[in-house]
Structures are given as structure tokens and as C-alpha cells.
Length: 123
Image: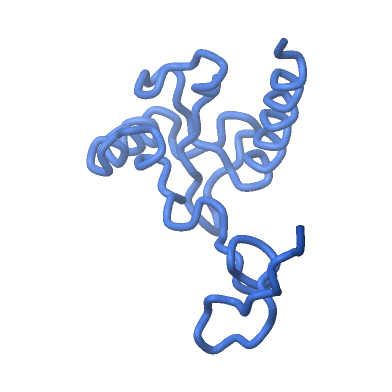
């Protein structure tokens, strides 16, 4: 059975051949585009999320719950201490804390590794 001829990228300005799903490598969609807001991912309204962050900031005095760093350059992000995927609560104040960017990167990498290991161990 003969293969179909190559097609052009669906972007009107592009003249490259499509490599995956009708688009060239340069015009592939970005995963999770438009869903960077944790409130959208966790099903919590943005107002509720801001209220939770305000309460946690007042409780923790704006310090990172992992290293104790104060927000000097940028405000810390609100983070789940126990990830939701591992049984943590979405809105419980005891499961929320402020986290600085370096600690968030380390924690996120560890969570991703644990998630990958769980996926590999599934029957």
C-alpha cells in the first residue's frame, strides 16, 4: 500500500512539511498552554485561591515553608505540601504553604520522579 504524499504545515505562513498532527516541528502546540493557573487545574476559583494564599502568607509571614527564605525579589508561590496526586487536600490550610522558586523546582522534580515510578509499577 503506498504512503500518502507529505503535506504542508497548517500554519498559513509556513512552507515546511508537516511532521506530526499536520504541523511542522516549529509550530507544534505547547503542552498545557493557557493552563498555567493552579486554580484552573485544581477546580478552585481564582478568588478562593487568592484568599487561601493571603491566609497562608499571613500565617507563615511570607517565608518559604521548606528553606525559610523571605520573598525578596518575587513573591513565593502557594504550594501543596502533600501533592493532590499523593492524597493531599486541595484547600486545607495545613496542606498549603508558600514556596520559593528554587525549592519549587527541586520539589516538582522529586514529585515528577515519584509519579513516573508509580506509573511504571502499575500492572
